[in-house]
Image (cartoon, rainbow, N blue to C red; front, top):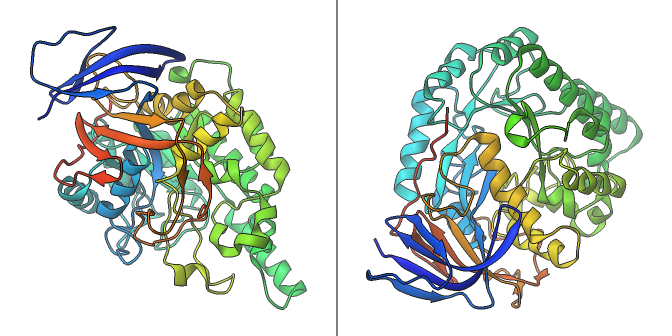
Length: 446
C-alpha cells in the first residue's frame, strides 16, 4: 500500500479550517501537523490552494444490484461515487429479489467486496411477513447499517403497512430503523381524484398526488412508534415544511434517538422545474413547491435536519421518458452531490464546515460508523481533495452513471473533485479511477 504526504492543504474538519500536512500510512491517517518530516517512503501531494475534506458518507443509495443491472451495478455507481467525493455508501434493499433474508443480504456484501471501489453497507429489507428474519439483524448490529421500512409505496412486497408488524419492528429492533414515509392510502386517494379530473396526468401532478399530507401523516406515525419504543429512527428524504415540526435540534446529535435526512434534489429543485425537466425529476417523495425547499434549507441550517444524502436512484433514459404514470421515479445524483453543496457554499447558503458536517460527520454519528467521517489521527484515510478555483460542467462524456444521464446536465459547478482516497488508496485522481483497490465493509460501534 502506497503512503502519501499531503502538503500545505486547508483541512475542513469539525467546524474549523486549518492549514497543515496530512500523512497517510497503512490505510489510515497517521499524522496531522505543520511541516511534517517523515522518514519513510511516500508519495508527496502538493495541496497548496486546495481543500481537504473527509469523504462523504451517503446513507441512501440504490445501486440496483442484483436484478436491475440494466440500470446500474455496484461497480458502476461506486465509481461515480468516488468521482464525486463519496467514499462510503449505504444501499437499499429494493433490488430483485428484495433483501428479505440474511442470505440475500450477505450476497450483496459479496458482490460489493469484489466490485466496489467505495466502502459499503446494506440495509436489511422488511415486509409485512418477514419481521422474524429482519430482527435477526440485531445479531449483526456491528456489521449492518440498519433495517429499512418502506412506510409508503414500493415494489416487490416491500411496503409495510401492517400495524402489528410495524409495532414489533420498532419495539424489538436494536439497530437503526430507516424509513421511507409516505401514506399509501392518501396517495391512492389523491391519484384517483386527479384521474377523475384529468384525461392524462403530467409530471407537474406528482407533488399533488404525493402531497404534504401524505408525507406528514406517515412521518408522524413513524415518530410516534419510535417514541413509544425509544427506537433509533432515521427518517429519509424529508421533503415538506410541515414535517420539520417533528424533529428537534435541542440535543447533541449523538444523543438524538430520532434523526432526519434531506436529499440534495429537494434542496435544489422545486416544482417550477417540472416544466423543463418533467419526469427526469420525478421521485418519491415528490419535489414540491418552492416554499418547501426554503423550509428545508432552514431546517438544515438549524439542525432539525441532520444529514444530506442523495437517494441516488438511476433509471434508463427510456424508463424516464415514458408517460407520467409509467415513468420510473428516481434521480441519479451520487457523482454530483458534493459538488452541488460546494456550489451552495459558494453562493453563501452554508459554509464549507457545514457541508462537511452534514455529509460526513453527521452520517458517521447517526449510524455510529467506526473510525470514519472525520479527519483524525488513527481514522481511516477516506479523504477528498477539492479545488474551489476550478469548474466542473456536467456533460454526457463525464457522467459515470451506467444510465448515462443526469438531471444536472450542463450545470456548471464552481469547484472540482481532484482526488479521492478510500482506506488510504488513491481511487480517483483527476478523472482516472483505480479499479484495483476495493472498498471495505463498514463497521458500526455498539
